[in-house]
Length: 413
Figure 1: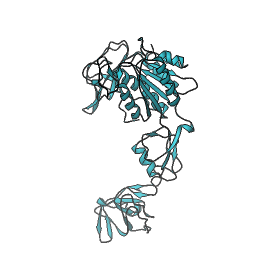
Figure 2: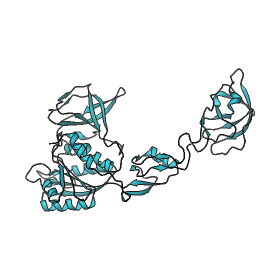
Figure 3: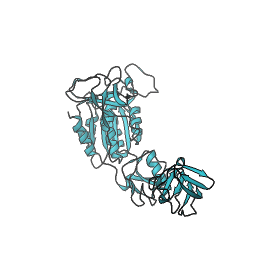
C-alpha cells in the first residue's frame, strides 16, 4: 500500500501534458476556460499613447510648480480634449487644455491637475495647488511594450485574460484541445436514476458526479454507462475507451471481491498497473495504470460515493489539469483554523469533507455534520474543502491549524 504522496508522485510523473501541434486548436476570443498553448504578443503598446488618468487640465509642470491658493498660476484654456479626440493644439507657456479621463495628452503638456484643485473663470483656469511632476499622466508603453510577451502559455483564459486579449486585438487564440475522459460504472447492482429501484439495487450516482467534475475541470466527457460484472463486456468497454480517450475512469470493481475483474482485464490488455491501493481514507482501493504505445491513463476508483469524490479530487483532478496543459497549480492546499473537532484513527491519511467559512476575516474549516463514512453521500453536498489528518494524527481540536485541500476550484482556478 502506497502513501498518498508516493501515489501522487507516480501519477503526475506519468502524466504527459498536451504539447504537440495536433493537441492544439484555434478558437475565437470568447472561448473562456481554455488553456493557452502558445505565448501571446501584441503589436500595441499599453497605454497606446500618453493619456490622462483624471478629469482636469493638461499643463506644463514648469508653469504650475509653485501654485497655491494664495498665489495660483493663471493659464489660458486653449482646447477641450474628450476621450477619443486627437488634440489639435500644442500647449505653450501660460496655456492649458481641459482634458478628461482617458483622453490623449496634448503635445507640450506633461502634467494633469485634477479639476477639484482648480477654478475656472471664462477661458482662464486658476491652479490652486502645486502638482507633482507628470502627475495623473499614464505614459505610452508603461503597462506593456509592443513585441514583448503579453500572456504566457499554460495559463487558463478567464475574464481578466480575455479582457487583455480583447484590448490587444488578439481575436484568434491557439489553445490546447480538451482532454477526453471516458467514464463508466461497474456492478450488477447498479441502475440509472430514471429506473424504479428494486430491493438490493443501487442508483449509480458516481457516473454523474464524475461527469460533473470532469466538465468543471474543462475536459470533454464520454459517458459509457453502467457495465455489468462480465469480464468480456468489461474488456470490450475498456478497449473501446483506450482507442478514444486520454483518460479512463471507472468506479467500482477494483476491490478484492469475487466480481472485481478490472485489474485482471487491464493486465490482459497489457496495461502496466502502477498503483493498486493507497493509504488514504476513504479511497484505499485505487487502481492506476498506463497502456503500452498509448498515452491513455486508467483510474479505477472505489465504488463508495465519498471515496469516489475524495480520490478524484486528490489524484485524478491534478492529473487532468496537468495533462490539459496547465503549467502549475494542479492542487490547492491551504492552512486554516478548524472550527470543528476533527478525528481519525491515525492509520491512514484521512480526508474529512466540509466547508471553508470566513469568520472574523479568517477562513475556518467546518466538518460536514453526520457520518464521515465512504458510503454517506448525503452530507457531501456543498463540500468545498477536505481537511487532511496525516498518518498518526488522531485529533485536531477547534481553533488548531489544519491543512485543507480546496476542491471547488472555479473551473481551473
